Length: 214
Image (tube, rainbow, N blue to C red; front, side, top):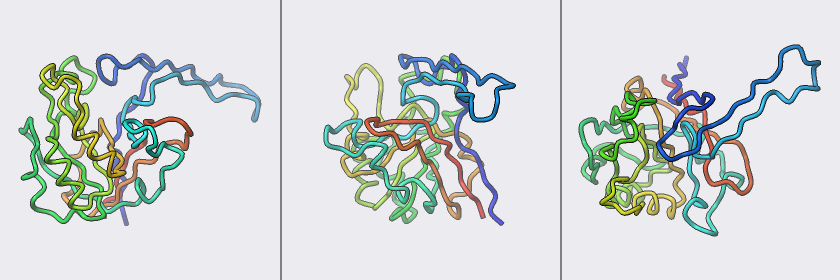
């Protein structure tokens, strides 16, 4: 029997996902409302809140958005965890071992231990090089996930460039950022899910990311 392992962060009122992003504002649903008459509560937030998926429309005008997303790109995918703990720049060599074709490739750096601290948004967070992103595309990955701020360098020296994200999204590969607890997953032998709401016009949205481990 498979065991579910939750690898997504909670979203709470006023939390910081990453410095510079708007905080979510949550109004809880009122208890005691008659069935069918309550609104269930309300959330105002940026799409890039908590653990979220990014779609090609985030970078490309004609790219697919959330409503275009096929479930077979984010649900019931065979997964592989790539250990990159201790690396700041993650290059192509990190992906030279396991077969990545048709798989969700989750990159474990351990950065999630800093979540909800000022250190989480530090510019020295682990990130992919452009060459690594190209390697993932060539290897046939269908989804890429990281347990850090994102797949790209965000230091001032990077000048806002996002080459790794651009490469992955150009290939139609959804990118999931801000995963957590990837150390609870085996290297292989699990199925991965990261399904967002089906919203037309949005390119990023939170997911409840989890794995089913045999």
